[in-house]
Amino acid sequence: METRRPVARPPVRGAYRYPTYVYWRRRVLVVIFVSLITVVGYLGISLGFALTNQSFGVSYSARFAEWGRTHGIGGAVTWLEAEFYKLHPAKVGGKPPASAFLGKGPTRVNVPASGHLPEPARMTSPAGPSLPGEGVWHVAGRTTTTGIPTVYEAFVRPDPVHTSYVVGVAWMDTTLLRAQLYSGSFIPGGHVHFAYSAPITTHSSRSLVAAFNAGFRMQDAQGGYYTDGHMIDPLRVGAASIVIFKDGLITVGQWGRDVSASQLTKGNISSVRQNLDLIVENGKPVAGLTAQNTFKWGKTLGGAYNVWRSGVGVTKNGALVYVGGPSLSIGALANVLVHAGAVRAMETDINTDWVQYTTFTGAPNAAVNGAEGTNLVHAMAGSPSRWFASWWSRDFFTMNLRSESTTTTTAKG
Image 1 (spheres, rainbow, N blue to C red):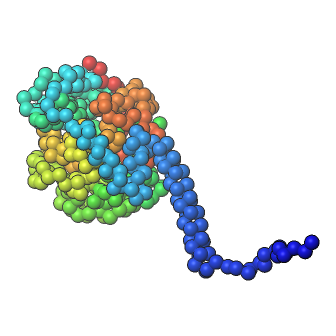
Image 2 (cartoon, rainbow, N blue to C red):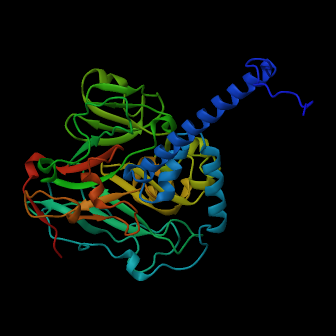
């Protein structure tokens, strides 16, 4: 029987082609897809490393924030932080527990009349009439072999509004202590062969008395960085500066006025760490501190104004004072430094994970580590062991007993 069904024939290759734009569109989509997978994969791996990197912060949220700001999503990070602080504002009013003003050492010891700076007078409270124990100085950290205190600490409320918070103040005798700037691969970066970098060595720990945080990341510090004969970032005339001289003496001042560049060229200076502008001059807070200017005084978490802050100042007789704690506005920080006796002072680092001051005790000439360290304020997030970790990539300062007082003893009540 004859069929009229057409005979099936195999398709002729190349008989039909889609328009050229279709093939180009496919290629573009493939490139976009592969690029997206690559970027997402890289960011995922990078974020994973950041979340396990202790130098990015104590908490996972801080590590994510540090990672985000270095990967172009700083705006989103700031928004998330702002939403958090809207829900958790600084508490107004209230009263701290009496134990908040207790120091770790005695309030007074019998020492020779000479060979050291006079011990500081009791601080008045920035919050108003002092509560029992508020502003009283306590001996902290190692003393000299003759029992002379090198560090005193006191605790005060930061201002008349946030009265449930307490911040710590440390007073350091620069005639008995030698300062050193430790540089990090992250801050300041730019130079890998620093003479002093974390961890603090066993040898240096034998005379270690205190360690404390430095300033902002260099892209935010509005200043420069000099150490080990290397100009890591150019020094800015007029910037607030922590200056360490070759003899270990440390001071705070305005670069180009209180400390001149000629001292650097003459080889008298070991290190200069700049951060923003002075917040205390001539024993008074500078003008303009009441404005919420995050460009001038630092980007706080979520743009909040009362956060963890720290600052360093110098007194009329050359003692160094450190202030650090919670719920500090830039104005309150300056005011606490003035109450501590500072004639010139500057802000150092801010936000919870970066504000830390630690004192160390131990047997005479014995090596110490984090186990012998105690933070100035109990709520400080960083562990005392941070200074002895090779992963710590930020810069910080140490205060060690001078060579004539290297035999040490622990202060006892």
